[in-house]
Length: 280
Image (cartoon, rainbow, N blue to C red; front, top):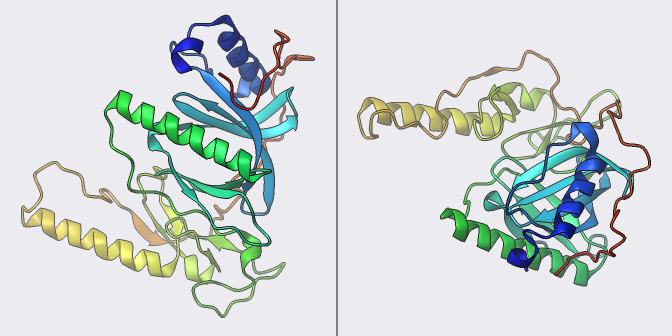
């Protein structure tokens, strides 16, 4: 399927249409050998609430973004290399169905489909693309993943001290290491997590102690020469310290205020060829 579509005109048109819908704010998506295999709307569980997002599956990347006008205009483009992706099906509950987690070293999040069949299609197609991409690159599956953020509504009290109750005046924060919802007092520290950001990030008190202990252990091992010279520690260059009070907990999917330069009346499928969720 991938080889057949790689150099076809319809594949080029599909990719160009997606680029047009993201406008000037999106990254170019057309590359030699890249194939757009399917698309669909999934519900992404964000910090504040679950939101619909448009997803595009390519043979080497997964792209998603916010929907402004379906099949016309999208924004907040995110690109995830498939060799970094691991999927984890989630159990069904009365309130939450057809869910699975998309895990990477930098970000992990939960999505859900409209039906069990659609969920299985997405999982099967993504896993097959990941398998092919790992085979092509010679890489091993990722074993370290970022913790997903627990939604704000999941708790009314700090998940660390279990004393502070959240309100309009007492806001929630998220630990970047464990994803727990915590109060300001329990997340005063920041620590450099190189896989997530070049800047020190907010972490809860428990994670800070664990990370600091790990950092000290690595420094001691390096001093004793148990690690080869020049080999970076897991948290090499880690910077830690108390929070300055500056808030860095903006919504992960906060939308930009500007629309950018969008083409007028873009036709999503200019060729007139109908498109199923996954094409062959």
